[in-house]
Amino acid sequence: MMRQEKILLTPGPLSTSLATRTAMLKDWGSWDGDFNALTASVCADLLAIANGQAQHCCIPLQGSGTFAVEAAIGTLVSKSSKILVLNNGAYGQRMQKIAQKIGLNVATLSWPDGVPVDPAALDAALSADPSIGYVGLIHCETATGLLNPLSDIADIVASHGAELIVDAMSSFGALDIDLARMPICALIAASGKCLEGVPGMGFVIAKTSAIALAHGNSPSLALDLADQYDYLQRTGQWRFTPPTHVVAALRAAIDQYQAEGGRLTRLARYTANAKVLIESLSQAGLALFLAPELQAPIILTFHAPRHPEYQFAAFYQAMSQRGFLLYPGKLTTVETFRVGCIGAIDPAQLQQAAHAIIDVLTQLGWLNSQPKHSTIQ
Ligand SMILES: *Cc1c(COP(=O)(O)O)cnc(C)c1O
Image (tube, rainbow, N blue to C red; front, side, top):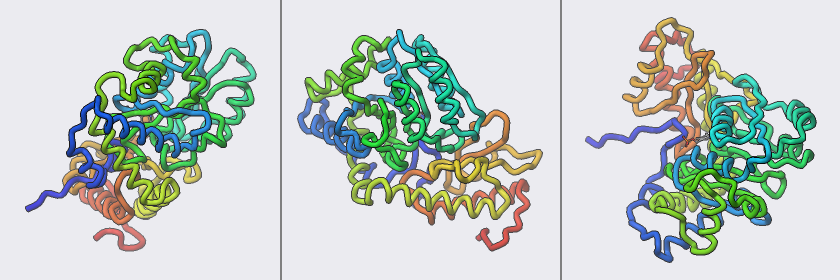
């Protein structure tokens, strides 16, 4: 009997299409002109998705998304300046930690999990401290699924003459980010999120003028984006071994993204995925952690059932046996679990996942589900 592959509700890695995985069956030489053309075409398309052709460039980087965040902060922020990190979750905290590790002057504005960045508080902080030259923001805080008000924040940062660096890891390609309309110095994202490639490559879409001024900033050799960009410009090649199969898979994933209809079509599918989950689970008595108006259709955080014996590990195992992989909660004060809406998955699969969640929790005795409609099959 054929074993069905598991559906990853863990963004990311996430479920990818057969076409994307098939694109990895060929080996590429890193000196090969064909591979250089592949890199160039991927970077050009990423830049176009952000509408950044006028003033920005796209710099690819080996590694997971965090490598690209560390590279962007280390390359763009000069030691003589200061970065203000806007923190309302685990990824904001990680950005703060990265900036501190690099040895930068770091200020932080924090909000509790589930509370969006307050543009007025940011405005006041920038007025109070003119030495802040950079602001770091997480667009969609994947720890909860919260969407921060990017456009308002970008305008405020620009009005103070500061530069905005955005971790758009879990939003790029699906949510509205328009570099022609929003004053943003740099966007950071990766292959294996809303673009539905495989993990292994990050990229930074940065103002070309900012990269030109950034030589000598980075305390790291491998994570120096100014050097990476220079080398790419001069030779068409990556510095150091490129993740060839990841680039090929991303090329195929972007082809499918474009064929599917681009950003709005992708957003519509993710929105439909999220809707199915929210409706089914809330009917069964599982409450969303966030207020609905703050929720991005990327990853959903649900309160765990209020049962004294609830354990995520057992829940995870039972769901895995049903063919679905979940994410644990990432909050310290409340017991939660997370379900991703992104990847090559559609509402029918999310409906099956919702049924499985309700069924498993009911069987484990942790959910007393008396659904209003019959949601259990
Ligand atoms: C996925 C993600 C990252 C990168 O995480 P890695 O584990 O390094 O890939 C960074 N920021 C956000 C908001 C993310 O969702």
